Length: 550
Image (cartoon, rainbow, N blue to C red; front, side, top):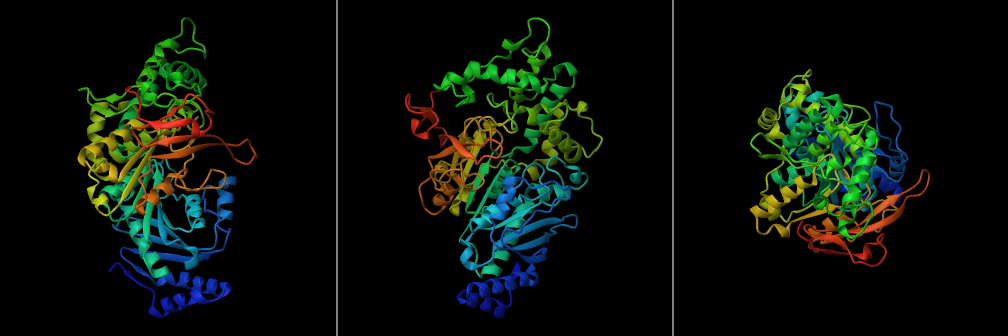
């Protein structure tokens, strides 16, 4: 047995408390919460179990950063809950922190569990998403995956292979098991269904759960999954070296608008609309040579080294034998806070998120050398070294999901067509690999590609479709507008989702968010095509159908 349930008399009194007045019920639930510290867990210990009053939670932040207005509003709306903190130690070098949040009363719980994922190299909790889940009635859990650090910092991994395994696959699985133990002890029953929804590294965690631990979740929503971790970061490091090795190759941020404008001029109208959104960037045949300076360099042109680097960014990464290591960055989402300035170029050479992830990965996880010099990187050696050292722990590339499907599991993948961090073509490759393994794949997996969306959210296109949970002002909370709700319906014997309506949410500073555009997202390989009439800002003006061959 993994757990020792609460003492029988306490459990009986908790159940009897369901008939008490509200005040007495709250007191009874508070007592049940505090008594969870007596629960015995396998390989883990509950360090605290206490009630958090409605609207009172504030996330701990050792950096002293202020809570954003959006997160503050989320926390204010969270009802009273039981906050359970756990430390799991599956190995002597493990120190996995887990939090389980439980709606305080049985009547406030919707009977379901929602696991939360991470981003980057993890190291913290997405408290706002946990709060949103509790506000919607879910029992929820999160984990730091075994270390406390900023998302781009992997120094914790240096000479700690067990911590890498915790981050790679073990921590989220243990979070799930221990959360279910706590839920069963607190409510007297297991959740009716369990769901996991996350993006980026969280998307990788989602696929790891489906592949290695198919009994953990009934429904999984995996966004922009970094599932081919070793290849993704090797390709990123290769492009980093191309951009930074010679100073003349660096493209400064002030030239990114030039590139974006040229891409849109060349390709925006291919889908029948000039709206700043590429419906399918694979059809774009933009040639960087058109931006070559004819004379002296200005911000209105690119030098020969800059043109060469731009071609590298838009090209797949191949090894010396011409074999694909990783697919290319797609054109069309260069601008914006979630575009190239953040992920690829940074505000100055070497200060992008992509550089930070690549250098931290190779220094701390592959070569065990905190002083590793990225200038020594060679592509063919790096992909061999990265695969040998980390693929077993970090890559979630197994296409055989039949054990997950056999339990009735459902998986929905989504990816922004203009993601500058993780290529959407990689997610298409994974989807196609699942299709090749199992002819019955359509009964349990769907893929949605999002035109104009960058990494997990934002970008020029509509990018709000319930992937992080419903929030006021983002459209109706139903399966037609919320992909997470569509997943729940599918798990509950409803129809497989063939489309969902995404919304673009805009607001000027201090204004209430408003929907400025809606557009259908279509189950791959279908795409949303403009009907030729009607308002292009309304989803009703589009129809899902198979694309013309590109």
